Length: 101
Image 1 (cartoon, rainbow, N blue to C red):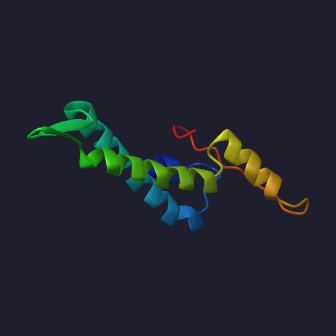
Image 2: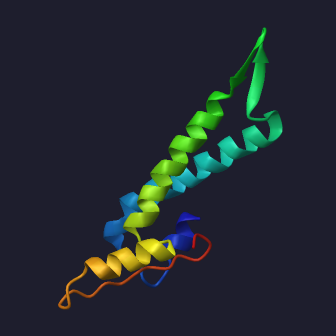
């Protein structure tokens, strides 16, 4: 995934740290989702029904990803926000990374 993102024509080397973080978060999200798909969202502990910690971790990971997606303009609303916030003198290049948009 990292090679796919960094080989994109709009990729800039200064984005590498954020790209590494994004790929790690996406990998974490996939692992948490696979665990939840296999084990369910809840488990029984005695008489109590509890939420798997992986579900909480999944939600935190998704929130972090949402922030990174916004910074890179990877959703339609984020793209509009990035373009809106630029002055006429600024050139805003919104990078569309295949597989993530």
